[in-house]
Length: 272
Image (cartoon, rainbow, N blue to C red):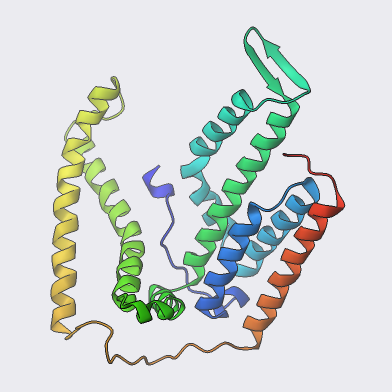
């Protein structure tokens, strides 16, 4: 399960999405996530799903990577869908057993929520798969630049966010190594009740915290040795510039948003 979490990983490539300006990728990802919750019927949901699948193919990232990242959230998707089926009321009952009644409207709502969660994870993963941590830091800093007027340390904030995202795969790999080492020493982490399993995590969490603090101190020392003093007065080797493909992607996203709004008004909403 630990190895199935792929968020934060970067996979170099030369696809159209890789070449987009990182600022534009963040803007497009935000717009996609917003409009994932705007869809109201099968037509608009199908249009959004088709756009996400097409983006996956254009990114040239192996599909197994996307599916591998989804394994970690299947339980959340199933749990959320089940709760919606049990608690959402409607007019047309499709299943009834004693006090449990499942309505047609609840099935639609559960399906919509499950697909939305999957598309959100895929879209977020696509951003990290196709954007290097350096470019991501520069993009976040440029997008948050207006906050400098309110004396917000934008550069430091962007740096912390990117470092945290960058070290997610490293910490997951370290966790898996510690778990394998403890199992080799005879530790039992899969049997027993909740209390026993929680106690079995202590031999994993303590070495993980120690390793995390050690990595943090090593990173701080490395930044001090390179005379890092924050973002004031810093320049960049590669300056971010919008290009024709970025405006094309923005127009394409605008057309998708307009199409979803049109389809929402064209067909009656199946989910209220």
